[in-house]
Image (cartoon, rainbow, N blue to C red; front, top):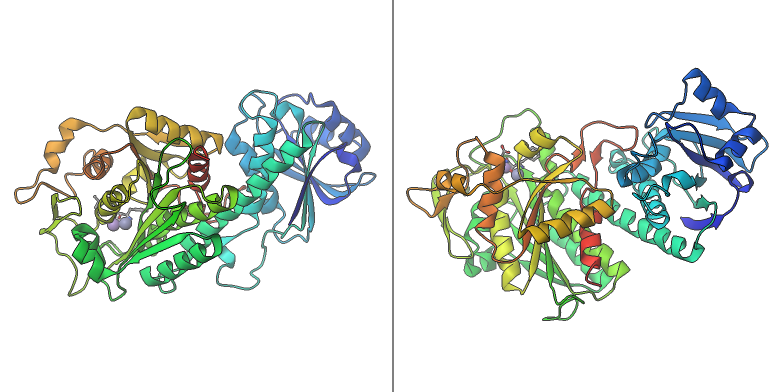
Length: 501
Ligand code: BES
Ligand code: MN
Ligand code: ZN
């Protein structure tokens, strides 16, 4: 896809579809008013009768008679004052969703000055986020196993971002960044969306090797014998139950021992459960098929390091993706099993369905052993986080506070929403075990808090945990996004890592 940013009047741009964001406020953008006049006044007319008033994700497709575009696609984006970065991302997604099944090769997006003048979203960010939204919108998980399902989003060949004025070189760079981050999110989504008969831990390790070869990264793959020898007792407790052997996957960029411009080595750790049946503590059948998505964290960190390699080649960075299939069977861990973690702590596995924290605990320890100074993990860890925050907000933990703030700020810049959950030290006693230092699951009250507190036992450095169980995939189409893997947190991780470039 060819992307360009131009300073022009939107009506002169030759394109198939010109996207114009419509705000809920009385229109103040003189250029938009002039565009509407040249079209014969349909937008003002629609507003008058209540057909298109700027309510988010209302759309109208207007024939472009008399202007450069064949069609104008007006999309409601809410009020200027409420305009957020995630709204900017969704403009791109909403355009692609609205045009599903329509043949469009050239798309242009007009950037109204009002939306970049509020202080919340600067012009370069707007351009970056809209381009990312278009790129993500072009990929529909429904197409993964089919050549040409009906109603697919159009594959844009020429994308033009139209601004009234501005530093075109800087905006073009922002557009390019948006494209690369969008492509990274799509890589994460494509991996995450693959079904469990297609992607075992070994296949995920192969995919990681391919990513390493393509981007000049160093891959380390630790199989079950070596993992046992190293003392990854929690990782193996989960991994040994399946015929598909566990694989502990790590990708590294930068020379060994090197740190980034701030003297850090960031490790991004992702939960890679290629299928979560629950193990011996087996899950109910309803919705069990969604547990193919339980590897999303791993897919996200692998795609994130690939993306950073494109934007800042050689930047020291670590991606760690412990991959297992959580299955019941003659070799599975049983409730009540006691294992020794890589950091030496003794853990009772009283629920084999609380497996994510087991593999992540060992992965966090391993990352620190590799020299990580700062850690962030991404995991579809708990159903509780989805009940608490739904599909649009990722719940998370962090310590010290300054590190959580940095992670959340990186997310905010990329239009991703996080909410911090507290540690409650008084709950720690409920995780006590008679036979071990603590157990992997305790009473359900405060279980979300306890999930973070379990992981905290395995870190000694600044660390944040992002629980994407709610946000990793949509269970239905929305006006701005397709059902399936969302790529959530990829942009946050990339932004966070690039702070050390
Ligand atoms: N992979 C699940 C969490 C999950 C639930 C992800 C729904 C996506 C959607 C995780 O391994 C799990 O089973 N968590 C348990 C923890 C409990 C046993 C302490 C849960 O949330 O019920
Ligand atoms: Mn589970
Ligand atoms: Zn799980």
